[in-house]
Amino acid sequence: MDSYVRAASYNKAWLESKLTGWYDMHAGVDAYKVSPYNYQVDPARVRRLVADALGAAQRDVKLADYDVVWIVVGVFTRPPIEGYGMACYAANPGMLSHASGRGGFRPRLETVALTGGGSFAGPATVSVENAHVGHVVHDLFHALGGLKDGRRVLPDLYDFDLQSNPPPGLMLPEVFSIHTGPWDIMSQHFIERLEPPPAPSSFTRLRLGWIAPEQVVNVKAGETREVTLSPLASGTGTLTVRVPLAGDRYLLVENRQRVGGDAMQRSAGMLVMEVDPSRAEGTAIVRTVDANPSVARLYAAPFLPGTGERRYYEDATAGVAVIPLEQAADGAMRVLVTTPERARLEAANRPKS
Image (cartoon, rainbow, N blue to C red; front, side, top):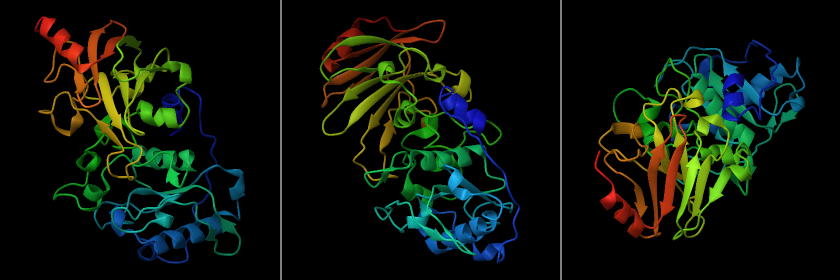
């Protein structure tokens, strides 16, 4: 987890941790077990787990000294019913204030009365001992981001309805990561079980303050400007283009190459994300635009110069187009932010590849 956080933050953040336990609980696992489906999680069971586990741990550690607490439930778990139930979740802010159903999620930092005395009101995550590191980092980021104006700074980017009502088959993260796909750990916890988790997108890195203002180029809709983007994983140079749209909506454009934290991705190129912060969590706050819709799961979403099913991004209503122009040997990519009219003209004059 520490290695992941250091790479994702460009060494601006790291973990200093203390491991304590194991602790005997006051009841068997069935008393704490929760559903693997978001809408069906019982917050009373989450509260009991936090109260009993941290009540025991406070004998050995001063909880207030730590920014985040991570509770590991010592039982092997496999969906839908074996073991504890849900492999990992953010308890606070998160499931402690959970209400079932779409639109019912109003995360808060709850105060929990601990077994044996005292209370706890800080960020906390819960996982089973066989959770993927991507599960745990995902929920750690919820905790690190905290709350702003009654919402989590780092929201879930997967689909809540699909997560709670998945189609038949294995309950893999890719099944309900339909909006952003594997391009942000807040969307998809892992691509392959035995590989590292995906890196954050510029959306998540910006919200955590890991991309500096001078690494963002702001371009207004209707303007034309060429920008050279460094690979997002590098952390150096210009990392993203931001295009404000109507209301609070905006576009983020980034260059994803299969290096560093993006080495496990299945494709590379210019990634375009449509962001609408007004949407409810779990309902496409961030939507990755798919340059190659014939490839499932957004695994080939990036645009490439002169090739692919879609050669450039266009939003005719907003009056914005983004064209990948050229990729250098070092992975840097020249992109052109312009109008749809100019983009069509550029495309017509470009040789086919």
